[in-house]
Amino acid sequence: MHSQLVVLGGGPGGYAAAFLAADLGMKVTIVDLEPRLGGVCLLRGCIPSKALLHVAKVLSEARDISEWGVTLGKPKIDIDALRARKDKVIDTLTGGLKQLAKRRKVRVIQARGVLESSQSLRLSGGDPSTYSDGDLLDYEHLILATGSIPAMPAALKIDSPRLMDSTSALELPEVPKRLLVVGGGYIGLEMGTVYAELGSRVSVVEMTDGLLPGCDRDLVKPLQKRLETRFEAIHLKTMVTALVDHKTEIEVIYDGQHAGTERFDRVLVAIGRRPNSQGLGLEKTGVVLDKKGFVVIDRQQRTADPHIMAIGDVAGEPMLAHKAAHEGKVAVEVLAGEPAEFDKRAIPAVVFTDPEIAWAGLTEDQAKLDNINVEVALYPWAASGRAQALGNTAGLTKLIIDPESERVLGAGLVGSGAGELIAEAVVAIEMGCTARDLAESIHPHPTLSETLGFSAEVALGTATEVYKPKRDRHSHAEPEA
Image (cartoon, rainbow, N blue to C red; front, side, top):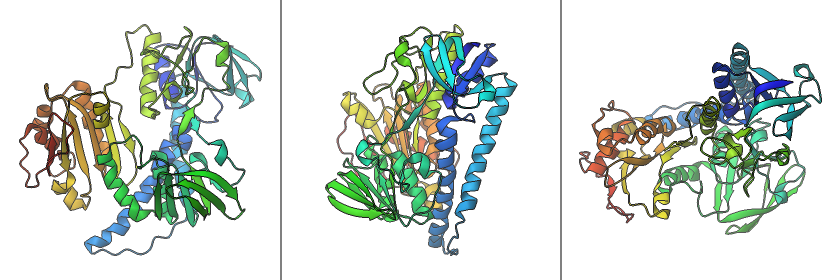
């Protein structure tokens, strides 16, 4: 078999690349072992987790509405119906992708693809009706879009159905009475939030001194304060050294600040993901991997092998679906002879907890590390009329600004809907907008989007709100209260 372009992997990056290539007139084949397109993001990640987080958010709001004098009854959760609804969302979206592929005449082969050379792929497993087992698929170019897989330390890898990774946790096998989440990153906190709202007593253990390592501490503080009221315990500077299966429970052995033992009904290990670059036959090509297992690429998504490009999680951090999709389009445009490259100033990241956290562009911590002189403007949502009306005042909008040009270099938000609000900041950063551009753009009132404009006013020294926001010009010293 022959194809002009083969995309190995049918996730957000893979199908975005394949569809654009087909639109540009290329003969395209997607090879993926999954029976449906969508990859981890759609089948076992972004989409199902956000569907469950929506339910968690509704349960949280139903509880908090009592502060307004409205009392609702105790929720009754039908776990089978919840699971079915989540699966329906996935089915709808995967069905749509199937139709899009068919409309574009993109051939989809359900098989495991292993490279035999720089220009050939050996197919096996999967659905033999889409190919002949053992077939060799040759091509002019291949886009590697194999994504990532959950990381599981050998010390914690025990043979027990009570041990979960992010994939099995999303299957909702049950709502355990007590759940331990190993890892205080975004996956652990999002899944911990879901299970806590469904009724589990959730504990989180994190080996560093704070939740969401690497995230701006100003943004993490309101979330951590909230989670301390929703989770049974948060153990920082602590690590799990061993797990012991007792059939009906898992015994957890801690070391560090919270050294000791404890038993849980289930344990979710969510310490991150690693690139899916092993077992693909890359050693038979000119592709180079770095020490973490990521495929080394240039700004045009090219690998060291002239016939192979790489996108998404397998091609480096951040491991985000929207980054993969944009990289896929860049790769195809390069193959089409366009002068394209991945040169984004801002790749937004969102943690879909309650409250949400979102950021994009330069962070304050990175500015410190790189010795970049910036101005930091903070606007607390306690000064927002909309936040007060919603009862969501524990939020914050933060801008990182170049003090010379007043250009917006970065932004961060924590609060309800932060993941939606960050889009305006991304556009501002990409377009080189100044703080004055943001401040003088009329935002609808009363909305949370106003806080971006108000933050810009703080930077300009023109804020008029009664509550005096925090401002830090030309340095990283502690701002005045």
